Image (tube, rainbow, N blue to C red):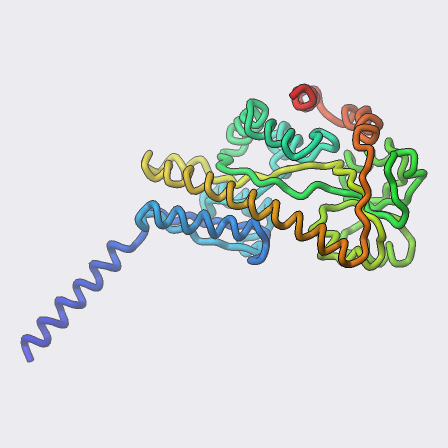
Length: 322
């Protein structure tokens, strides 16, 4: 009996000891707005797996999708206060860092490769440095977002063919000014109202990435996807600078290495998803139309430049010269 009690005590102590060993030294709370099926979340899962494995459990990553920690601005504020640690964020960063506006400026980039050169070169370093300086957030990876395209019930290949097209745009002054310059009649409208407005012919077109064109079932009320690619943008995965600085050099490197793998994984998923979306929309009856993007970009440029500050315009010009 004494032997059994002694054995039980030893086993209990061993279990408590093993649990203490398994307890993480650092916990990273990673909140974002995407749902579990979204490729951003799948990439975040990859990051969690790599960090926890390569740190031997010394870092635990807790994922909070679906705005569980609040909306994008809420999570940024929480990271700055130290109650959250990581998020996925985009042009909202321009509220602090004006150079981050380049993350969603119409016709800043010719194609995906041009954008990659900018983001991974000196221009990206300049944007990231201002983000860190002004927000205390450190970008550790970037994801390409699907380009925004124009949908309509008539094919459009030149800006002249817009001909006062009643077009829904988000309530972003730069977007409104750009489409006015191109010859359309832009109408800011809540996204939730767009399908009905198209159905009732209150508006004749809208512009969004392929993912939203599919998920909102715009294929039921629009015939053409005109490949304007007028906004090519990216987002950053950021971590709080204070949180990062509190880690040892070894653990910081684990985070950086995992972030690089997460970025590569997301890029692969993104390419697959864009191909799937094009096939899905084609099967549902939409026709993809090649557009004279140079003509669109040329006509839009004066309005774009007018809307930018001197600091932003310098960056825009540097991008054009890449």
